[in-house]
Each structure stands twice: as structure tokens, then as C-alpha cells.
Image (cartoon, rainbow, N blue to C red; front, side):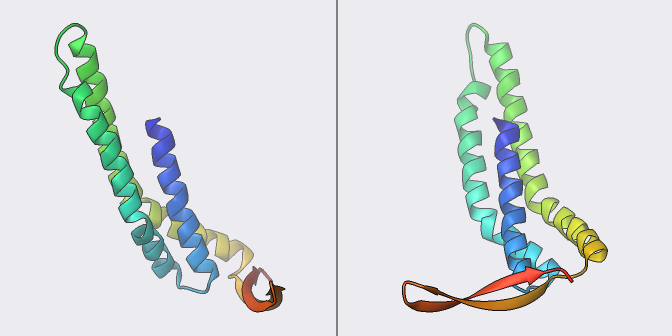
Length: 129
């Protein structure tokens, strides 16, 4: 569960950063915007998970030693993983996006008009040339 939650947070940061990058933002600005947009939900989820494990970490009675070790490891893993995700994932996004754009070229936005329920909207479509 811990790995799944941390992976979900990383995926959301990258998706938001990629969305901003495709809309024409600078790569570093897109990574910062993606991480800051997801910061509050990530912290809320992480702290809810951590506070849910506090009783396990403070257990007493029969089997308390195993409960304390599992609780402590899970809380520590969530704290380290959250800090890693918020600060390191945007840096990794920049590195891999830079590598991707050097290999396949920078995305070029092209506008396309289409109609939705009688209203015209412009979509930003990126292609690699």
C-alpha cells in the first residue's frame, strides 16, 4: 500500500508537469507548477496515512513489538517517500523530459478548432517534427 500511494503521487506530479509543458510552459516552470499543484493533496494523503499508523506504532500488549516495528517502518517510509516525491520527482521529470526533447525534438504547439455543443474551443495539439 505504501509503494502504491507513493507511486500514485509521483504519477500525478509528472502528469500535471507534462500538462503544463505541453501547454507551452518552460520545462523547469512546468515541473515546479506540477509539484506545487499536487503538494496539498499529497501532504493530506500522506499525513492521513501516517496518523492512521500512529496507534500501530504506539501499540502495547501481546505482539506489541511486531506492531511497533511495522508501524515505525511504515511511518518512516511514508515520510521519506513523501519528501522524496515532492523534491526529487520534479528534478527527475526535468532530466528525462530534457533527454526526451533532445532525442525527439521540442514539442511545437498547433491550434485546432472544433465545436462542442455549439461553442468553439481551441485545443493545443503538440507534434514532434
